[in-house]
Each structure stands twice: as structure tokens, then as C-alpha cells.
Length: 195
Image 1 (cartoon, rainbow, N blue to C red):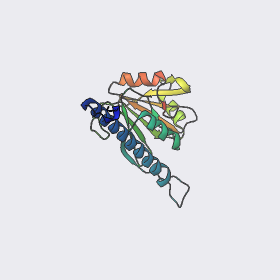
Image 2: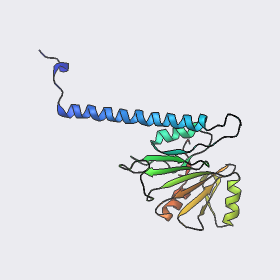
Image 3: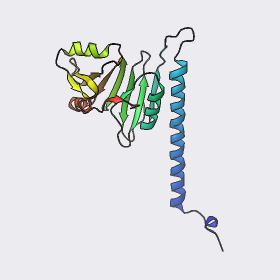
Image 4: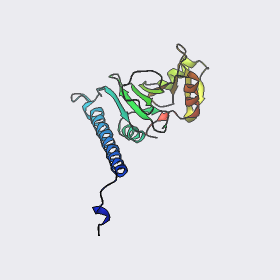
């Protein structure tokens, strides 16, 4: 009598096992990319002769929501985003001046893909960001959750800047729909990924 393990696998079962292996492989690849990014960000980004951080750019890399939260928890700055979206990946890019961009990628879009029809949340180093935005707003700003202040970009009207008291960073939210960008900021969804 043959046991269950002696039976040949059916085609659907083999396909399911291959799919699971691919998912495990993708997860391992994302974890490795995250680990490399953290190492570059935290260790290589410091000049050995000085205690002043030397910023190293990071080319676009796609992270899961948990990967982005993990990275945000270990780096020495906030990385703002607008919260998770089902089945999306989050493209992280950092420029050599310390600006960090999170671009929301829907299913089927790879990191580095061209196009500007995606939600983007940027984080800019900006000592005194809240006071500077308050001054620029001149009473036209919108108060947001957490004591923050938001201001629609006065030049382009396509994005919204937001700053919080006692935080040396400013966030900028761009959405193909400027009204949606403002709605996201007003909702309180724009916050550091580690929270």
C-alpha cells in the first residue's frame, strides 16, 4: 500500500510550491536589500575623520511596508510616508544632500520606473522647519494632527509642505491630485514610518 508521500505531486500542487518558493525568494531578496541599505546608510555614511555625518545617496529600492518601518526605526532621521496601501511597494531613494523620497508603487511597477503619476512623500533635512514654514505661511497654513502645520506649495500648487514643532525635518507630499495631497496631510496620515 502506498503512503501519501509515495504519491506523485499533482500539477497544481507543484505550481503552488513553486509560487511559495518564489515568494520566499522575493522576501529574502528584499530583506537582503534592506540590510545592505541599512549598512550603507548607517556605517558607510560616516566620515572616519569627523563626527559629522557624510550623506551617501541610495538609488531607488523597493521595500515592503514592514521593511520601510524597520529601516526608519534604525536610521538617525525620520522618514515620512502616508501609511500603507494594500499590495503596494514603497520605493525609497535618498540623494546626497539627505533628501529621502518614498514613492508609492502599485502592483506591477518596479523601483526606478519612469513616471510622475504616483504619490510621493519626501523628507528634507531642515533645521527650524516649523518656524520657517510658519513664517512662509503668513497665517495661510493649515493646522494638522500632532501640532503640525501644512502649506500648499505657493509656486506650483501641486504639493503640500508639512512641518512639526521641534523636528528638524520637513515633509512634502505630492499626489497627481493636489487636493488628495492636502487631504492626506489633513488626515494625519503623513508621519514617520517608524510610528
